[in-house]
Amino acid sequence: MTTTRRQFLKSTAAFTAAISFAPQLVAEKLAPKPALEISLAEWSLHKTLFSKQMSNLDFPVAARQKFGISTVEYVNQFFKDKAQDQTYLKELLQRCRDHGVKNHLIMIDGEGDLGAPDQAERTKTIENHYKWIDAAHYLGCASIRVNAFGKGPAQEVQQAAAEGLSRLGEYAQQARLNIIVENHGSYSSNGQWLLGTIKKVGRSNVGILPDFGNFCVRRDTAELYRGKCVEEYDKYKAVKEWMPVAKGVSAKTLAFDAKGNCIETDYDKMFKIIRDSGFKGYVGIEYEGEVLGEEEGIRKTKALLEKVIKRLG
Figure 1 (tube, rainbow, N blue to C red):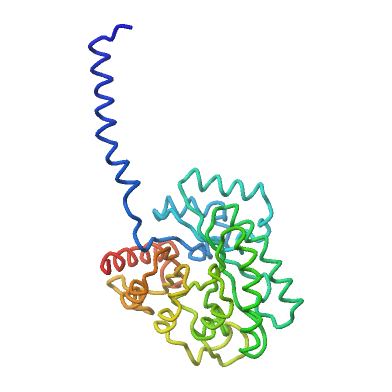
Figure 2 (cartoon, rainbow, N blue to C red; figure 1 turned 90 degrees about the horizontal axis):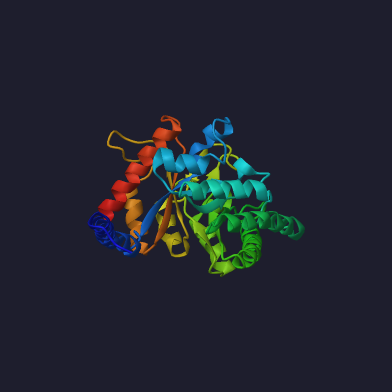
């Protein structure tokens, strides 16, 4: 076969371009991941989702296209009846793949009390969570977030929660998934109680998801989330205590000052604690404010995280 000069020059140019581009590809693959990466918690858009302006299927695409975030954290409330719907899960996974989005976590609510002192009730709750572990595994998530709720004296609920979490962790281990507990009210907002619970579990795949909010340990009513908070656990103390067993971080924001700093949490102080712990992993944006719209709140939280992470190194 005879090669013309034009063909030779064309193939040589293509080869030269490929060679010049190769180091860039190698560099991208070999570049170390940053210690802290940003993900987006679906709860940041809960008003939009509850009002049906967005569906759970839309969420990962919106995270990528609107906010430039390629890792997402779901909330089961927005696809409550779909945990075992393979057609739905397949479509959700395909949308993520089509848009280069990674599924990291599903936050589970409304499936019962893992810390219920009654064994039959606790067993039912554990089994209610199995389908979400299976769904998370199918979607390629690393963890599910659960609650350690229960009614009764603190020590009794702690013992029950440790047993419930241990059994759930055993099931999740088969799928190489983590079970992570968030400080989400009642006893779980007490730093020592939650840490003690996780230590009682003693499983490497059961840990904590520290949330920068939710540290109320006593209200003027016994009902969960109701009434005025009259006592809070120190959030910085709690996060410092929890980081050795943390498998994620929930960066909650409510309001910002004129410089873009979070008003209710000192992010420099908080992230110094996180950095000094040696934690590596995802920090999930969870905007829950009332003054700014959800999209603006997410963007401000992302900008704040990027600034703080860069500054602390």
